[in-house]
Image (cartoon, rainbow, N blue to C red; front, side, top):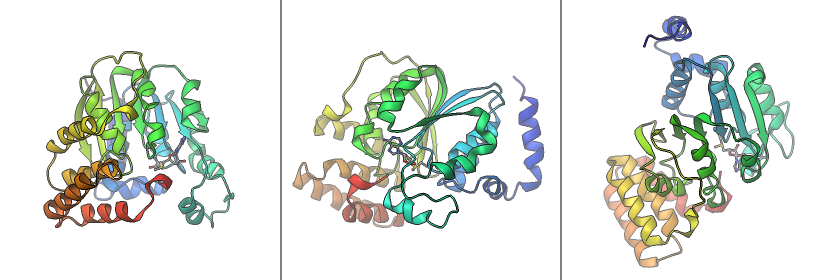
Length: 295
Ligand SMILES: C[S@@+](CC[C@H](N)C(=O)[O-])C[C@H]1O[C@@H](n2cnc3c(N)ncnc32)[C@H](O)[C@@H]1O
């Protein structure tokens, strides 16, 4: 009923930085890819947990989010960290001047950045399609920032099934066109989750409300009508930029399936969201890039 001592201590120790709390958090671990709002939310979320938790962090990169979980979760918490720890071209170029740079792996950099939280971390290094099988314990918190390729969507169900009823799920890139499969998957599963809210034009946050049957669902076998109808339910929930970003995300799944529908959706995005620089940027990125190489 009352906040724990550690939560009160946290508020006391951060009060002097009330005007620049995120700046202070970033000084402690300056590696995060998250926006200021997301850093603020995730840090506060972790510090307000009263008891040790088991977390699965899917997609750690060089430890920005690992550090927030490591610093804020109560002592005795366990954090399963899933990542390939292998560069893509953008990462190789971004990190090339780091003293611990290696040609193929950024694992040494993640290790250095997170070493003060080492006692909480359970490393699951490799393809999550394989490493997902290495833990079966129920989860309190599930953080997902890894589904940038269709091959990863079905395995998410195993993590949702491990999450306890009452546990918290965060989808870091829900609104981004790199993760369109998440949008219709979550819509399909909405009997099992309450959507609590969203933050930073990226992340959605859910509480699991009902167990999910231990069966496999092939989310890649959904036909385009099913995908479109689930997407449209998600889009209807939001206005302005968020609806526009979801329309761009839906476009990613329509490209290559139906030229007429694709042209209509591009027109709809341009006409409805032409004023939103972010939506227009996403649309241009999607037109230019080969989505298969992204994460
Ligand atoms: C956007 S980054 C995560 C960023 C991190 N959450 C943060 O904010 O600091 C996505 C990560 O997913 C990892 N990843 C992509 N595909 C993977 C796979 N099949 N198995 C394991 N990790 C994968 C990449 O190596 C990358 O580090």
